[in-house]
Image 1: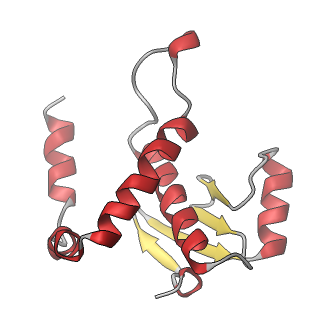
Image 2: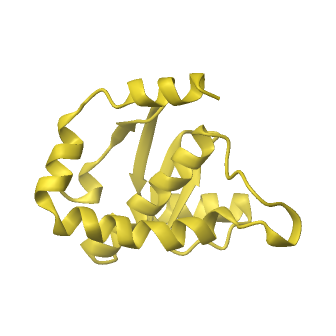
Length: 130
């Protein structure tokens, strides 16, 4: 399945995926972000991805932006502040490529992870333990 075929997904609400040059340029301009390939708009529950790049790059961009969605849902990064603080993009840029590559190279692992359609029960359990 191509990224352009993903129209919506669920992650603590319904999110829209838009692959459109004008839309990403408009949102980048409004946000002041210097984004190149993708942008997550938490206010509109939307991920906007630049079209015209290779399929693998679009998949990585969607995966990267999904991390921003998840970080937004859990309240952002927790940890050091000030000069020692990590930026969200720093963490995502370190984790996303390796995780995506691992999922792609390990079909059985990926299938087993996708087999449990009710993973939210673990999120609820984790939030109660805090």
